[in-house]
Length: 258
Image (cartoon, rainbow, N blue to C red; front, side, top):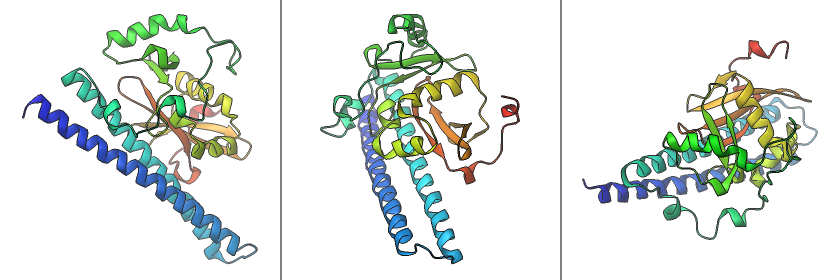
């Protein structure tokens, strides 16, 4: 099979994954709406079925969101493979029409000294060495779209771009459907990215999801919660979202004495 034929098949697979992501969005909305309707209808009820259904709805919603993130990760891998064999990825081919970083509700992060809870952050120019290291390692990085660059606790360079609301990056992490989850966990929206980088740069994950995502523990007013961070092999931060506490399989011993 020629490279052209391979690319055509990859394009088809990429497009089907976009359809799958869209389906998970519809499923998540249906689950959320159904749970809300049920909760309204059973207000004041003490029957055990009510609590059980609420629990199952929350679990189902979390699993659907995980699936959506997995699909985005697979697309990122397909893009990387296409880049390797053909010198370009499939982003421009399969991106939903009419949707671009410029149309996302989230405004771009300004690289100033006011956006970090951990102290002043350097200007983009100070990222030059890290970006150069990424490029030497073969990463395809659009420096003009970079939101933040850092170094993982394991030593590799990681970065986040504005991305696309339906696929990956800052726009995907802070899309409207996820904002309420961060707020519920007590993380202000303007501190979400800082929190992600702080965890990845300084803490060991307490678990993994078995699909390339690392789960970190965060302390909130409602008790400890899990925050999943998915990073591609090239160091690109694909997505991050809260993990329902009943899905955490173990607690981090390293969190003691923080």
